[in-house]
Length: 76
Image (cartoon, rainbow, N blue to C red; front, side, top):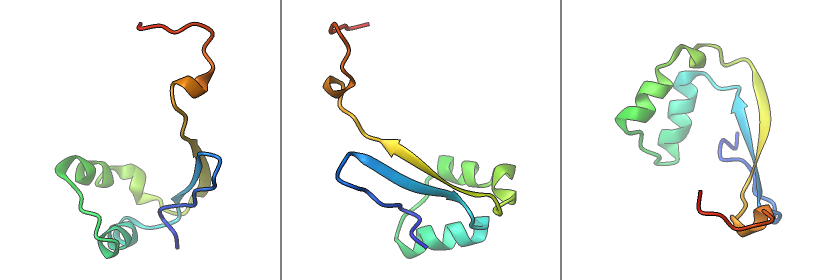
């Protein structure tokens, strides 16, 4: 399983969310030498990770501020 997702050339990044138990997710992260700080551990201990059966793909799109096409620059 590719927990890190795929990254096409258009700036998007597809990530699979769910489908692994808490134990399996921790094993995958450890196998990739990804260390968890205390805050990440608190998140993984949350009950939302008790149900790992729901699996979905989400797409994260990376854009620069200039790529957002705002009509006027602002500092607010």
